Image (cartoon, rainbow, N blue to C red; front, side, top):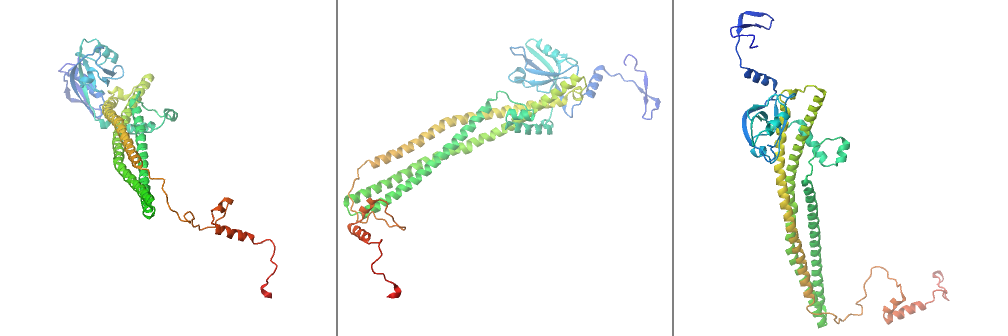
Length: 451
């Protein structure tokens, strides 16, 4: 166009009616080639409402001659090259300037437009100790990336989390999985610890309730033996019953003291069970939500990659790729931010689980030792109390009817030996009743009508 027109030439404009306006010719204005190229690029890109700003960063290479970025896009399908991922603990990650979705414009002052990602990677590797990168920073709103598709993927990952891999495969549910996730084992250990504490609290509570009932029985025994001692006429037996009753009353006091000592153990174990573990579970629930969001973005990126590959295999154009692939770059940025949030919460969960494990190892041993020492002290005091003096055997005066008990029902004699328990008078009465002849009729029959 520049070779065919000069500044004094004019062109005709066609109005909407198709007529040529020859009276008001438009003068030709010379436009620099670079401006035309930028204008054409702006017309080609579909930024989806996002903005970009230019910048430059110098990154020092590591010992492997790498800066720690993954590049995507480029010729022949995409008009620009962009960063797919920033790897952890690499020069680019430590610098913090570049992010996923940012466009690469030049490397050491050499433009990368129109080049493939392999060529750009070689340009970076060919540099010496540092790389100067010109970039276009993508200013993306993460809320724009949280679409309905991402929400549904989070729900799917939450459902798949509770089922086995075989079941998910049978249902045809695609999902992203964290490989070698040590936190899953820690969560299983937390569940076992919670079950252990729940069993300890339940068993300790049942044991203390049983001991309380036992102390009440001791008290009843003590009152009963004290009452017997008061009514016993024999002095030695009275004193023995009185002391025996007093021992049971002391045993009841020892039991109450022991219960007061061991009751705080239930509160300590309950604090761990009902406060520490639920607080950790709340942090885990937040971590799980961030985890499912990160996995959803990973799955979305995989789906977009598969879509690009399928279109490339069919040699068909894909609109989002030809216009800068901003949708894909937005998902990449959202994935990076979701990963950062997920990593932070994961670190918090690991720290809390570590503290919880340390408290469990130290606290449960101390509480069990305290519980065992309380029971041992109670039994030692009881044994010492009962071994002070020998009270039995004692002589007690019993009445003749001491072992005869009133019965509301008929009594039957099962053995012949039971007859010996009767007194001689009762034996004679039994013999006299047996001497009555019940087999032969009486000699004189008395009829009421013939009297």
